[in-house]
Image (cartoon, rainbow, N blue to C red; front, side, top):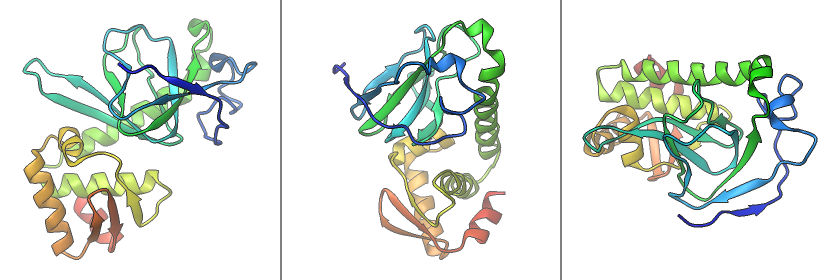
Length: 218
């Protein structure tokens, strides 16, 4: 693994951030938090590592995944700028986390975790909500329904805009939605043929008919 470069950076306001009045204790807010740089593909933590921090994405994106017994990868979540990740119910991580692209993360130290359950509640609630959304997406039988729901969710998380950026690859999306990469590529093409989206390039999407896309994903 490449060594991480540490630099100071100003943190954006976020409802689950260290500056929020309901989240002061575990972040050790008396000292400035440093932003750690991770290169594309660099590991942030591995399954089995002790949980010492939760993390906020300052820029870039993170994928959280586990490796199945047959060697396949199952991506449980993506996290983009302003989002918190790394919260676990156990003392050790059950998942791996790594940077998708050049990413800055801010570790938030969990000091005396047994005394800050109230402060961690918003983070736990955020993680539970994200997990429920992912399970709902996977419950769709058709690939077009899964991909439509995924795109709507990503649009909402990026300011509810019609122009969205997908930092993850088609393979990442396939491993997240339980599809093959070929199916994901064909489904993107199908959504374009239906006039629901435009594809300026592989990482940028323009949503043309938000309501129709949302109807397919529901």
